[in-house]
Image (cartoon, rainbow, N blue to C red; front, top):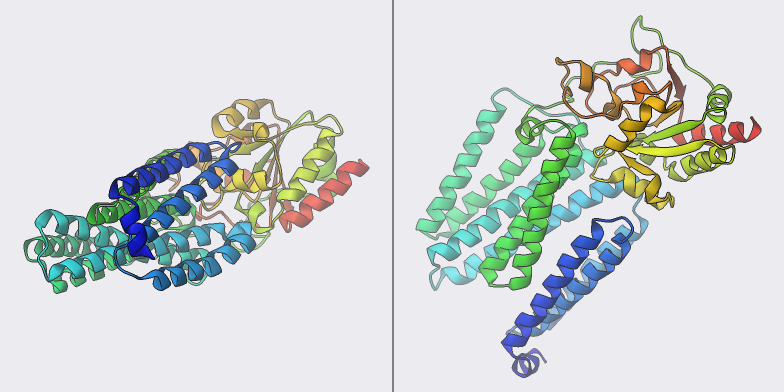
Length: 468
C-alpha cells in the first residue's frame, strides 16, 4: 500500500503537507494563549497532528503498516481514558509523565537513527544532531519521571539534598559533554551509551533538590527540554514538522519558564539549586504555632462577615484543587452576588502545581474570564476590598516574601491580601505551604482561620450566607 502511495504522491507534496501541519501547530499555540479560544486551539492542534501522523505513515519507504497501527492503537488506549477521567489535582502528574514519555521517545528515535547510520558512517554535523536529541531527551525523561513520582506521592515532595550535591551534578554534566564530544569525534555505540546514562543522571540531579513550591517552574522547564529534543530529532531525520513543533514547544516552554521565575521573584538557578522547602517551620495541626495566638471562626461568623461586605476577593490555591471545590466556590460567589456583593477572583501566576492551574480550575466551573484578576490588577483592588477569602493558598499571599529579607521566598511577588480590611483563610491546619515558610498573616488580628476541608467549609458558607 505505502509503496503505491509513495509513488503517487511526490516528495514536494509531502513537504507542503508538513508545512500545513506546522501552520496548524502555530495557530493552535496562538489560540491556546487565550482562555476564550483555547478549546478551538486544542482542535486546531489535533488536526495538525492528524495531518502530520498520516503523512508520515504514507511517506514511509518500508512496509511497517502493522507496527504503526499497533502503536496508534496502544497510544489511544492509554491516552484517551487517562485524559477523560483524570482528576484536576492529578493533571500536573499527567503532564509530567506524558512529557517524560515524549522526551524518552525523542531520545529513542535519535538513538535508532545513530545505530542505523553507524555502519555506513555518520558525519560530525549529523552526530551533533543525534547527540543533542539523545542527551536532552534523556534529561527530560528521567527528570519528568522523578517529578511524576514526587507529585504522585510515590516519593517525598520535600527537596532531597546531600553534601557535595552540586559538585556531583557538575561532574556528571562534564561526563555528558565529554562523551558527546567523543561520540562526534569517534561515533561508537559505547560513547552514545555513556552520554545517555549520564544524561539520565543529570535529569535526576536537577529534580531531586526541587520542592513543591517550585514545581510549576520545573514542569515548564522539562517541557522545554522535550521540545528541544524533538527539534533535534527533526534535524536528524530531516523532518520539517518535527523541527517546527519541537522549536515551538522549546521556545514557548523556555519563555514560560522565564515568566514563571520572574513571577516568583527568583532566578532559575536559585529555583533549581536553592532547595526551598527542605526545612519546615511549623507544626502539623491546628494548634501549631507555639505560644502565638490566632483567631478561628465558624461558618456562621464568616458567612455574616461576607454577606454584609461590599467587595469580596476569592484567592484560590492548590487546596481548592485538592478538595475539588471549584463548583462550590462559584456557588458561594453567586450567593454573595445575589445579596449585592461584588465578587472577584485574585489569581497568582504560580498558585497550584502547574502554570495556569487556577485559571483552568475555575474555567472548569464556568467562571467568566473577566472575573479572574491577574496579580497586578488584584493588588490594585485589595486595599479597598472588605474581605479577602483565601482558599487553600499560602505562599502566594505570605507577606514574608515582601517584608522579610531573610526569608527563603523573599522577593517573590505576592497577592497583598493583608491590605484587605479582613482576611479569611480556609485551611485544614496551621501548616505552612509548599515552601515550608510559616505565614505570619495567620496570626494577624484581622485574620480569621476557618479549619476543615475546603469543599465542606465552602458548602457551609453557602448555606449560612443564604440564611443570613
